[in-house]
Amino acid sequence: MKKKFVSISLCLAMAAVSLAGCGLKEPEAPATTAAPAATEAAKETEAAGSEAATQAAEAAGGEKVGPDITLVMAEVNPLDTIVGQTDTAFKEKVEELSGGSIKIDLQASGVLGSENDVLDTMLGGGDIDMSRISAFALTSYGGQKSMLLSIPYTFVSREHFWNFATSPLAEEFLLEPQENGAGVRGLFYGEEGFRHFFTVKEIHGLEDLKGMKLRVSNDPIMNGMVEGLGASPTVVSFGELYSALQTGVVDGAENGYPGYDSNKFYEVAPYYLLDAHTFSPGIILMAEAQWNKLSPEDQAILLEAGKKASEWNKAAIEEEEKALRTSLEGKGVTIIECPPEDIAAAQEACKSVWAGYTEGIEDLLQKIVDIQQ
Image (cartoon, rainbow, N blue to C red; front, top):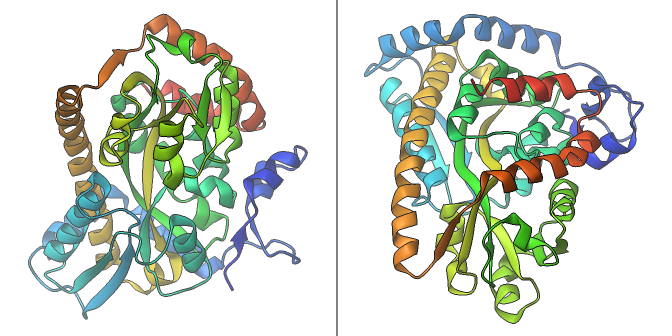
């Protein structure tokens, strides 16, 4: 029986509990470790390293490597979004490298539910084999390491994130849910770029956000950041955000280029401030039970396909953001380059947010910060 993540709020409240205590637990049963045999098998596979995975996948390319397998993959976004296209790149590479013996049944546009619905299904042993899940979504399930990826101003550039995502440190984060006994494991990272603030009224920097009502989800990290900037965090559902901006319920919000454009927020909030406060990484997760059914050759193919999909994603989002910026400016959007001194001041203001959620794992956060070089 798979165990569910303890909520991050409970983990944070129990300051005396160690990092290991923020793992996965049954509601009324003592925590145990993941099945030893499964864990050892997974570790042995990982020990082969990316080079061995590449060699195995290339050797299998174009030839069937075993019986036909179909893996159901969930995606909440449409296929024409950057994340949907990344999923498609992964699907096509898997099917190419396996000679068609592994098929990915990609179910997009949220037909299998929201990210939380999909996670609940996977953690509960349902019939979804894999999914792209935002790293931030895992924080509600006790993903303490994943939470670090959402701390404001952790990543200073796209290169900084990909230095992390392709480093040995990334594997520690990808395998956190498996090692905690969740029954899922991370395969690879993708991204949707940085998130920026946008407002109804004209602004010139972060200082101008003071006193504004800024839309947030019900998330303590983002709430703390907005308060640190001197603004008022206001919870509004994403589906109601457009009308909330239009009617003055909120003065602004935050999102990446793709979300800002596709939801047409520029129509009611045409001032877009490039402060890059939060990066938006996604993790492609797979059910541990299904992973363990695969042969080492099939596992290597998934890992190699994930590596190629990550590379595609990094190049594609850079090009998309350039095109979106040009398009948005053509639609009358004022894009503001955030003054460096504003960002430095915001980082200082957000230190209290960091401290509140990184107690006991400050060294791990520092490793992420240091990997920017």
